[in-house]
Image 1 (cartoon, rainbow, N blue to C red):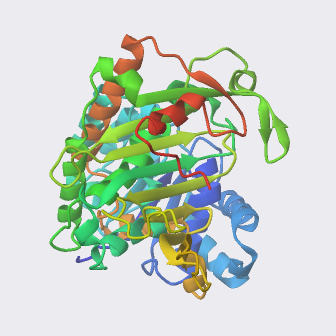
Image 2: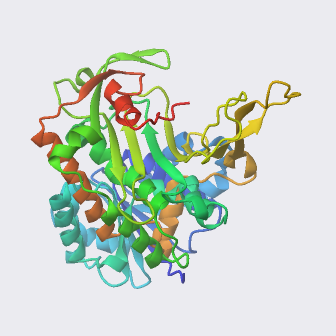
Image 3: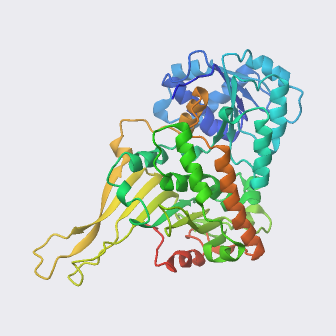
Amino acid sequence: MQRNPVGKLLLFGATGDLAQRMLLPSLYGLHADKLLPDGLTITGTARSDHDDESFRAFAKDALEEFLPKDRKDPDAIQSFLARLQYQSLDATTLEGYDALAAKVGDVSGGLAIFLSTAPSLFEQVIRGLESAGLAGETVRIGLEKPLGYDLASSREINDCVATAFPEDRTFRIDHYLGKETVQNILALRFGNSFFEPVWNAQGIDNVQITVSETVGLEDRAGYYDGAGALRDMVANHILQLVALIAMEPPARYDVTEIRDEKAKVFRSLRQLKPEEVPQNSVIGQYVGGAVKGEIVKGYDEELGKDSNTETFVALKAHVDNWRWQGVPFYLRTGKRMPTRRSEIAIQFKPVPHSMFSGRGGLLQPNMLVIRLQPEEYIQLLVMAKEPGLDREGIRLREVPLNLSLDAEFAGKRRRIAYERLLLDLIEGDQTLFVRRDEVEAQWTWIDAIREGWKANDMKPKHYSAGTWGPAASIALTERDGVTWQDD
């Protein structure tokens, strides 16, 4: 696509945790690699009382803490800090936006805004930007998800944003889409001819997606207790992975065509009726236990009060279209799990007839495992003959064919997901950003599940920290003769 880089970047929430850990290191990485436009200025804004110099000192401290040692180039850090300036702002009132606009300066050369604030502030921020002339045709805006907590609130936010920023200037960020391995799903599917003939209901038995965390609430208690695992993880990251696995081949790598195909997947998700929800979903909440040998508290203890918020959810989903009819998608995410993992496991159907039956080898169906984190690899499990003279029959064993992306591309720096997304925002490429109709189709599906929980008075089942969730999640798959991929 034709890129249209802006000359200025405005960061809301510039002193927050996300800015320190991800945004400032990502922008520095782009600067050090000479990928930022010459002359690009970066204006930070937040409630914190800084001037230009104290904000640069704040940013320098963040880079010292969160950059890898091999990326700390004093000269590059100094020249990056020279790009930074700061204007304090109370985003809840219109006062101060004129001063912010004056600090940003002339935006005729293009301005990109990264809005990392609570969604409850979006309307006030949009009004402030409009009042100060920071929402014109040369301005685009990036919105850090989540956008709302259900379909109605999402529409309210999107309607508000659309009054100032049309869809072609709105960039909804899901940082999972910036991960190299997530983008590699497209390369794996559409760059290799041998997968496509079996990438359908005739070749695939089931798909499993697991996003597990070992951490608990950390500093997200206020947000998480009002959201829960379904809204926090499934409504964002996991459904985007479903779309990349299930989408039809676009005619070309084009922003509109890729997002069109993803949107079709979301519209094809089978919406669960209230009476179907208990058989197709499991919710849990962790209690005290041990994670990696460390004793940890239960959710209610961490929160400091009783709560029915789910910290674990497992779902059985279907994509009702020609390609995927009858193929279950098992989705699972939770906190205080045994290991940190983001993984897609695609279970192929068994061979139609085994000539080895009764001769010392139980055939296992092939499986493709795509690990997104913490390691990045692609593994294909295939059957192979064990070495030997075979006097009592051929013996078969499942063996892995491994492609380690970390090892194969060891000479390439593994970038933070936000590096790609910030660069695309600056250059105007919307391919890896989420379109409004995608968001609303996702919420339509999510809302039906939550309504089913409410209609059936479903409460989270307890599971010990350090385990793979409630026992009912095992039954969810084993009713279909399927086992979760937990190795």
